[in-house]
Image (cartoon, rainbow, N blue to C red):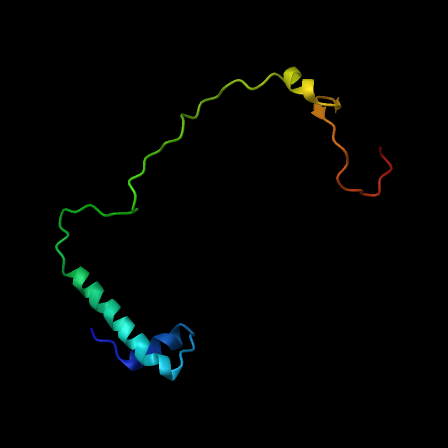
Length: 101
Protein backbone atom coordinates (compact mmCIF):
# COMPACT_ATOMS: atom_id res chain seq x y z
CA UNK A 1 0.00 0.00 0.00
CA UNK A 2 1.66 3.19 -1.16
CA UNK A 3 1.10 6.38 0.81
CA UNK A 4 0.60 9.56 -1.15
CA UNK A 5 0.35 13.22 -0.18
CA UNK A 6 -3.45 13.18 -0.17
CA UNK A 7 -3.43 10.31 2.33
CA UNK A 8 -1.08 12.24 4.62
CA UNK A 9 -3.31 15.32 4.41
CA UNK A 10 -6.39 13.24 5.20
CA UNK A 11 -4.71 11.55 8.20
CA UNK A 12 -3.52 14.94 9.46
CA UNK A 13 -7.05 16.33 9.13
CA UNK A 14 -8.56 13.36 11.02
CA UNK A 15 -5.92 13.66 13.74
CA UNK A 16 -6.47 17.45 13.86
CA UNK A 17 -2.81 18.09 13.10
CA UNK A 18 -1.57 21.12 11.25
CA UNK A 19 1.16 20.06 8.86
CA UNK A 20 2.68 22.69 6.65
CA UNK A 21 2.86 22.12 2.90
CA UNK A 22 6.66 22.01 3.12
CA UNK A 23 6.44 19.04 5.53
CA UNK A 24 3.89 16.98 3.59
CA UNK A 25 6.52 15.34 1.37
CA UNK A 26 8.67 14.40 4.40
CA UNK A 27 5.71 12.85 6.22
CA UNK A 28 4.65 11.03 3.04
CA UNK A 29 8.06 9.36 2.72
CA UNK A 30 8.19 8.48 6.43
CA UNK A 31 4.67 7.02 6.52
CA UNK A 32 5.33 5.06 3.35
CA UNK A 33 8.49 3.51 4.84
CA UNK A 34 6.58 2.59 8.01
CA UNK A 35 3.83 0.90 5.98
CA UNK A 36 6.47 -0.99 3.96
CA UNK A 37 8.10 -2.25 7.16
CA UNK A 38 4.75 -3.45 8.55
CA UNK A 39 4.00 -5.23 5.28
CA UNK A 40 7.37 -7.01 5.51
CA UNK A 41 6.56 -8.14 9.04
CA UNK A 42 3.17 -9.46 7.92
CA UNK A 43 4.98 -11.70 5.43
CA UNK A 44 6.97 -13.52 8.12
CA UNK A 45 6.02 -17.04 9.18
CA UNK A 46 5.20 -16.80 12.88
CA UNK A 47 3.44 -20.14 13.20
CA UNK A 48 4.23 -21.70 16.57
CA UNK A 49 6.07 -18.68 17.92
CA UNK A 50 4.85 -17.41 21.27
CA UNK A 51 4.03 -13.71 21.48
CA UNK A 52 6.37 -11.33 23.27
CA UNK A 53 4.57 -9.12 25.73
CA UNK A 54 7.59 -7.56 27.37
CA UNK A 55 11.17 -7.08 26.28
CA UNK A 56 12.63 -8.52 29.47
CA UNK A 57 12.08 -11.95 30.94
CA UNK A 58 11.20 -11.00 34.49
CA UNK A 59 9.88 -13.07 37.32
CA UNK A 60 8.47 -12.15 40.69
CA UNK A 61 11.36 -11.30 43.00
CA UNK A 62 9.25 -10.14 45.91
CA UNK A 63 9.22 -11.96 49.19
CA UNK A 64 6.32 -14.16 50.20
CA UNK A 65 3.47 -12.12 51.68
CA UNK A 66 3.01 -13.48 55.17
CA UNK A 67 1.90 -11.85 58.40
CA UNK A 68 4.49 -11.10 61.06
CA UNK A 69 4.21 -9.68 64.53
CA UNK A 70 4.95 -5.97 64.70
CA UNK A 71 7.07 -4.07 67.19
CA UNK A 72 5.72 -3.86 70.73
CA UNK A 73 3.98 -0.51 71.33
CA UNK A 74 5.82 0.10 74.60
CA UNK A 75 9.17 -0.37 72.84
CA UNK A 76 8.13 2.17 70.19
CA UNK A 77 7.16 4.77 72.80
CA UNK A 78 10.58 4.61 74.52
CA UNK A 79 11.94 7.24 72.08
CA UNK A 80 8.79 9.41 71.96
CA UNK A 81 8.78 12.69 73.91
CA UNK A 82 5.02 12.88 74.47
CA UNK A 83 2.19 10.45 73.89
CA UNK A 84 -1.43 10.25 74.91
CA UNK A 85 -4.01 7.45 74.70
CA UNK A 86 -1.65 5.22 72.72
CA UNK A 87 -0.83 7.85 70.07
CA UNK A 88 2.24 10.03 69.53
CA UNK A 89 1.56 13.71 70.24
CA UNK A 90 3.09 16.15 67.78
CA UNK A 91 2.88 19.95 67.49
CA UNK A 92 -0.06 21.30 65.51
CA UNK A 93 0.80 21.80 61.84
CA UNK A 94 -2.10 24.14 61.02
CA UNK A 95 -3.86 26.72 63.13
CA UNK A 96 -7.56 26.16 62.64
CA UNK A 97 -8.57 28.98 64.93
CA UNK A 98 -9.11 26.76 67.93
CA UNK A 99 -7.79 27.64 71.37
CA UNK A 100 -6.57 24.16 72.26
CA UNK A 101 -2.98 23.92 73.34
